Image 1 (cartoon, rainbow, N blue to C red):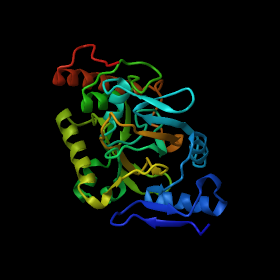
Image 2: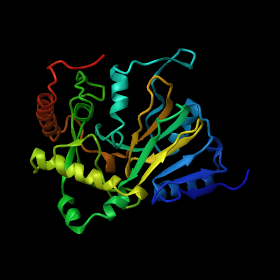
Image 3: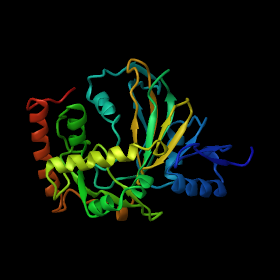
Image 4: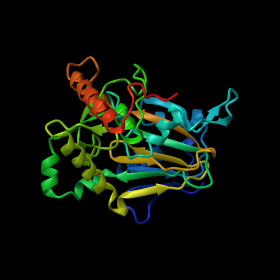
Length: 319
């Protein structure tokens, strides 16, 4: 095989394609080059890898401990033999959560320790739609005005999937410990310093709400302003048009991402692996920490307002 090539994405300020490599059998030099490119570019595309579940897990483990590995992100039920069959109903909670992730977000900011990086392998791709988009919050931060940088430098926002699902989709799933709808909200700075590169970036997304020290109106306006700024520059946004076998790998500490809509009656199966963040740099606090109570109170208050705004009944969870 020819020497591995890392090719920057044309017309973008981030991202690269990695060609002439088999990620199942990386030598030490290739792995170090991939790790360096990952930190430099923020995301990497490896075309034509066709990794199975176990291979996804092994590749992810090269970058740290996993939150989970080889998990299907799909609109089909997985059969016992590993194939995929029946299309999942759009009004199910599973699909409503998938639809919610069509808004910009960073993975796992709703857990005590947010994610380091994540990857998807395309198993089944619809004819049209279903792309994955990424946005570079590093260059966005760099291009903010000095006035905005000073304003947000010491601000934080709470993060919760119960908030984002209610705000974006109008869903109020049953609260349950051990699920992503667990009743906690974690306070994270709007400006994150990347633990490996030292670069600052905007740490925002659909899960973020309730900036302490600002009114609800001011908080929502500021978060929207920052998000709109990130995606306003085409150089900062990349849309990946999937081909079966593609592997897409991104840094959750530097980028936002989202899924794109498609015809949900047609099959779309991605295999997901997510690498856990390091406690020293990605930990907000644990539920038993006294600081967690502020998040619970903020979330409960916000959900009550959203129920009123959206006219949701007291019990509005979906199946």
